[in-house]
Length: 480
Image 1 (spheres, helix red, strand yellow):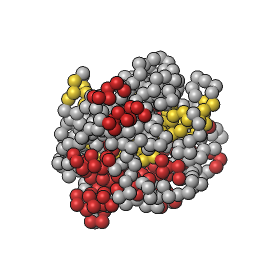
Image 2 (spheres, one colour):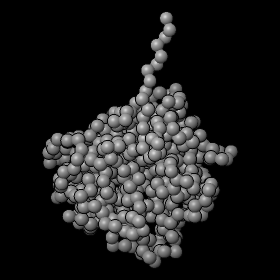
Image 3 (cartoon, helix red, strand yellow):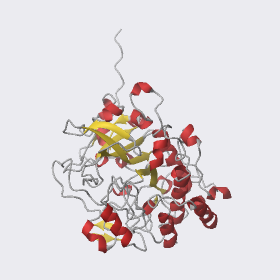
């Protein structure tokens, strides 16, 4: 059983409220008292999926450790360790993130970071992209930007529910999607080893801001050159033991405050909440996480603008707040998913890497990795043993009414996971999409469907709903 006060306390120690100097010591003490992130997320009822060996962690593993080598010599693992603790999943995710945002070793690609050397998804091509010449590099990414339209079939290119998000300068967010070259080697039985997808959200920077990773681009449908700053980074990794993909999400620290009013105002202000709106939250604090105070209803938090087709590039700024720090709703754990251990692992790694004395924070600004001190992990989600994702484990909206979560759900990690730049308007009990698996349902019988770009990389069946990979034909033999 989770203790609500524990999660609320850790949320207050987040970078949304700026890491307190004693935060790491506090989380260490809590870890020792609670067995910390060494706790396994799967000690309840077993679920179908690949067998994973149970290996006990040593007592020292109650402190979820980051490593300087993740920054200086990135070499992300191919699989989560067999013990499958929360710490294991978040160490795995941080290693993959840092490897992908590291400087590219091949200057001929024309890209600055490794993730930009992957293949780019073209939102305009609906099938067969793997058979086409690969689009790679930052220059191509600037041409593959996508905004929300009024027919939100392409969830990977836009907001999860198709709604547009406007920052406090009234500019719409734009998106890119990358995928690994290995993904094109997949078969109908499942994705190839090394498959991953990356989705990035960008906002327009009206003036230089050294706290953002940036890209020069021309907005779709215009000739206007702008500087884009990264605000969100989704990473979904396929592994042999986790074909449902391990979903992890990162954000800029100044995206949005917590709805409970505990977040300190950043010096630059919030990207997705006005000063008045954020002050209202602070003046009307909530004892628990969840929706904002009704006293702030005039600010219409987490409410999208009216959809238009096409959606204009500028519009009324939205006010956004995060209902659940680290994607954890307070209350009882679901089917062995220990909320305390999940939050603790995220907070500990964030503190060690991007806290006041974090490994990235202390780097000189001239170091290409120093920019990532302005970002943080929000959380991650996966299933126990690679099982089908099943029903949502938390309350959510279905057919017009709120239904309870499934107590037997195999989903693990941050069960209310939402990136404020991508799932902005799908938060809490009234959401139809309570986390990544709300859209990316995984079924072991149809393993390719977990990816929304699979049909555009390969093809879809006659129903248009299922991804299929046409048989590959061998190249014709040369004539004698």
